[in-house]
Image (cartoon, rainbow, N blue to C red; front, side):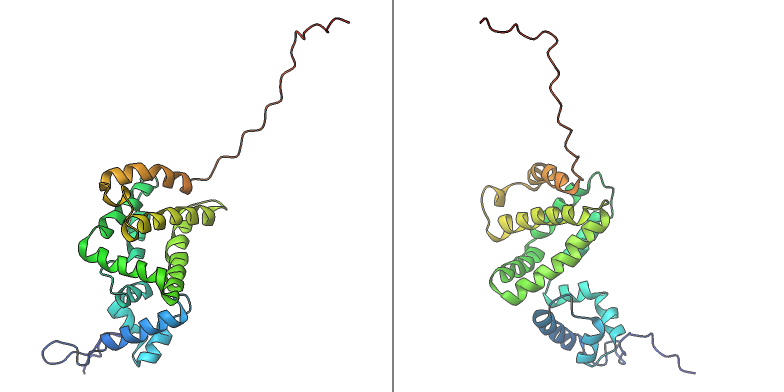
Length: 223
């Protein structure tokens, strides 16, 4: 009895390679759909139907919608995966990990070039801008909020994301000095405190103190 191949796995030819190369077709369909419909509305099932493949095949090749998006944008490193890596550690060092991961990848000649191209396109192309915004809301702000606690977690997550995205655009897109050439360790040390403040629930303001009455009031003025 012949054993059927694993669900979603591509058929193999005699030389061990894929019998039919569907990767290019999947990426072409996915990129067009991401740009036309936005990140949120695209589903793996609808992409599979349009590309004429099993949805499990897309999952097998790309792992998740995040992985597929990264492949469509030709990103060697997925920003959402970097964030997930930083969020998985202890809370105490979270700001430092988030900043250090961003600097490490964006400073990389190969990975950084693709990410800069995506960021620059998000500024100039409305479709890419909308897609970038939707991905940031779900994969960045949403994940940070899930890591935090308290009713104001989404607001703190949005404030933290604004600092991280601002750092990216100032250092890597606009290339403003002295931030553009600041050493990674110094940049992390200088920016982590403000990011930690954004991630932390603000303390309620202390109640205003009523002035204590003077036990020795001044004498009344002479008449």
